[in-house]
Length: 297
Image (cartoon, rainbow, N blue to C red):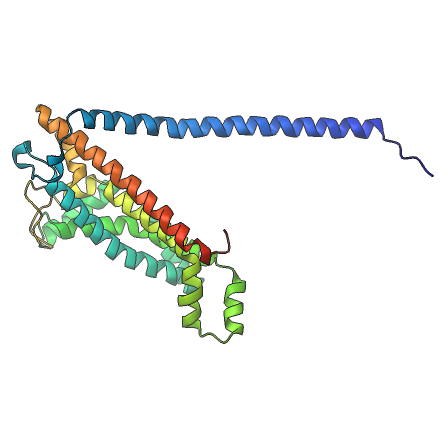
């Protein structure tokens, strides 16, 4: 029987390669951990600082009273924010999903390339510039005045590129085998898109919608130019009536000499953070519920 002998040189090479791999893995693990700390640490510090200052003077009437003369609550700002976000979610969600669907299914030619480039350029425009354009076009030229409608339309223009991009990517990630299998079963193209493709891409589309909504919740500059501000409850009017919103309270009340106004600023910041956290949790729940339709589980 022939005996197998190990080459010492090869053994040393294998041992050296294994040691280098372990060292590289350890370095990458340390760098990844430091990166996580660099991201999570400031976030925890900011959230903790805001909630700490918020809870010092918190009272539940903030959620039920209108802030007349900065001596009340934030009910008008909360309702105004909800109305703005709802309008953006409906209009921008419809436009963004349809745009992403078009780019995914029919955007392989020159037109698709032009639209993608235009969408990327629009996504890169600073929000304050969009706000100024909205002020000139809607508030001044079309005589809408500071209003809910002007604010919603400007925020819609701002977040549509994000929804369109995530929708397009999600639809393109649906495996071709799903379409081929459905065609082999005799399903029509409309049925394939509705019952197979959209269901599979739903987690990604939902994530894009939640991100766009979170962006709209946290914007201030475009709304200063278009929605103005009001200490009264929002009117059921699309134009000619300014509206209050939470980001204005955070930005403006903090600089007031009144301690009550500063406390309202921290209250508004805390409410916004809670709203963002709820949106993230909602997105995770929706993705978990729809993940069963996706191949990537």
